[in-house]
Length: 544
Image (cartoon, rainbow, N blue to C red; front, side, top):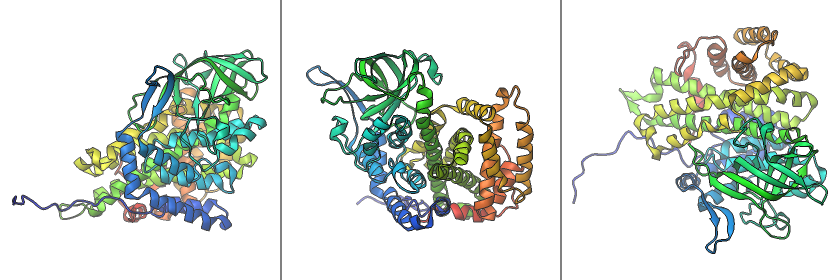
């Protein structure tokens, strides 16, 4: 019998077997705030069921397996026939199936659908962020297709269904479908007007043959794709089905899968079109305007995805520090560690609160809320997604060496954290989009100022930040070089105004003192020591 060399002690238990939704107070309060009362009971039951599934040991294992076994491309079958298929680990299909069945592609078809879906997206992608990509694009394809009522009538019922069918068959034979998107090309990147893919009209009205390539085509296993190509009338949006109505495969040549930093479970690809059959969506030459509804929706999902990653990182850090002891006491009770955790919790709650406010604006649908989204979505996309990586790094550090080990799950969060800042337009693209809204759409700024103005007089630091922002906005000449600074302030003021209205006083006070009042250092853990940081940390603690 081997002698025992030591006893394992002072280790935090796994954060597992808990309701991810119920444990997130900021998210739960946002759902109550933004949903009609008659929808609340059903929404809470639905989200708690999803939260328990997300927090289960089984689903967490699926997430790990999907990332440890990334997708593989099969260009040909055993006989040499071109098939261009992507094989996934069974865990990926289980995750994606759960996400579809939970309604994460059906926001457009039910009351309060965007708030309910947004909360579910924040919860579910904490288990595994990669499956959020096809869920997001399938959800976001709806507004683009609605520019063509006939296409919308054909495809929308399948896009918003809660049935996941992974087989490649004609869409008419499937109860539910997934969509991907192909916009960028090698020579242009974010400058999609530089695209060279050619669309040649066919005899049947509204149909074209595409020839060209896409440098980034997301979710290549999907049933359909929205792509941009140059038609005779200019850059145009097209729907490319993966399988044609007669059951034959459309020409959709997957050249390779991207070997990415993170997001390993999800397939991103390079594809070629060679006489590929496509249906026009919208008018010729109006491709960007047609697809912009999809882009706006996926940008909001980038904000939601970053809020999800931040929440999981902060939950893991606080959970670890609650159980781990050092230097004579629990880490969570040490003043310096408490400052770090509270600072991280503020960033997480501000991100969640802003993301859910944007989702509520989609449900409202009024002209004022649409104008608000025009400015607020790119500003939030710019700022929230950029805060994700520093939060993930600091949260990992809270676990020390344990956090640097793959088994902790923290390295996966860290690798995932930059993605949402890059996807759907990186930082400069978002900043320039904000400038365009300011210069071309005065209603957007009016809607934004009306929103933040609801909190005026509640906190002197917020009032001062609004005043300073108005000074910056008064001069838009030559503003491009300082656009990032301006957009950061737009986002922070909006977050501060929401927290002052909706968050507990301890949270709002700490946010305004640090982010708006300037009493903050360059790193996390530099909040004013006089604040009630223990309450901020306790609010963010996940109760397993």
